[in-house]
Amino acid sequence: MDSSDWGIIGHEWAVRMLQHALQAGRAGHAYLLCGPPAIGKATIALRLAQALLCDAAAAVPCLQCRSCQRIARGNHPDVRSTGLAEQGQGLKAEDAARQRDLKIDTVRGWIADLALQPYEGRRRVFIMHDAERLNDAGANALLKTLEEPPPYAMILLVANTMGDLMPTIVSRCRVLRLRPVPRATIGAALRADGMAPATAQLLAAWSDGRVGWALQMRDDPAAWQGLREQLDELIALGTAPRHAGMEWAEARAKAWRGGEHPAVIDELLRWQRWWRDVLLTQAGQGEHITHLDHADAAGQAAARFRIDEVHAFLARITRALGMLRENVNPQLVLEGLVLHRPLPR
Image (cartoon, rainbow, N blue to C red; front, side, top):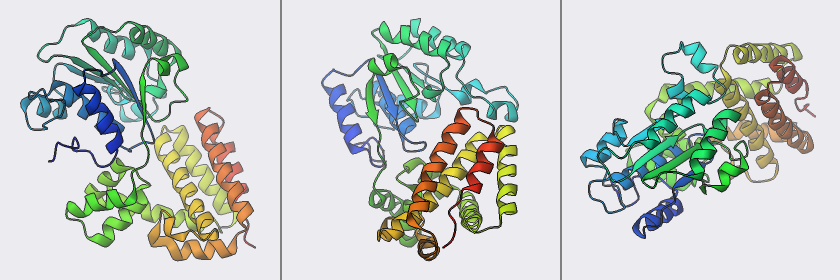
């Protein structure tokens, strides 16, 4: 694996900035990595920890030494991670899935380690995933730590969105807003890994610039096939009878109440991307659609639905996602959504 780019696909600007800061001895005590899920935030946090603690001490992670390997495996004593996954350890699967917030006890346990000096390395690195899910008590506890961190500690906050964090927390971090990686970059990486060019192009398009997602689907073709079948169902939902739409809404509301929040959100986002494909096709930008393998269906839908209704429905899905996250009754949200689908001309 090439370590000159920290073994990261895309995000070259972020790697350069972090590497220059390390080499100049001007690295911050806290960083906030934010961006869409599976875009590469956790990987950059991991590589930064490796760069700090690498045995070569060259501000570039070699990815091969004992320290880099231990950090990759998650058992280096000077790197401490927390997040919803760690908080859910020991819980039943359904209870872990229902977690909504990072609780104060989780944050306190993570912070308690800050008082300990490094065991083996020059620094200690503390990574908090799902930082946007901090409850008020946890956020206030973290804020106190950010105001007076130990000189040997680097704190890395990983969040899908910056807007849900306290402004005072954000202001005490150096912020890296990760942007989608170009399709060409992801496609080239997949081809270099042995994937057939046509498949690499298709998967890169489906990824919407989310490197982590593309790598997950590369390693799990069955999961990707399942998502393609789900998209077919969502496309059919656009012209399905009202009762079919209500049945779809009822099933997703039941899944939401059962704790399957990520699955429901992902499906709504996929539906939103589909209607975005239709809008792009209507605007004569079909080469930029996400689902290249459904270009014909997007063309048919572009001719069937009015552009203003498609645009309005995209905004309605965004509002529905926001209402679900704010604990509005999922049955009402989803039924309202399907009742306002664009109508064929």
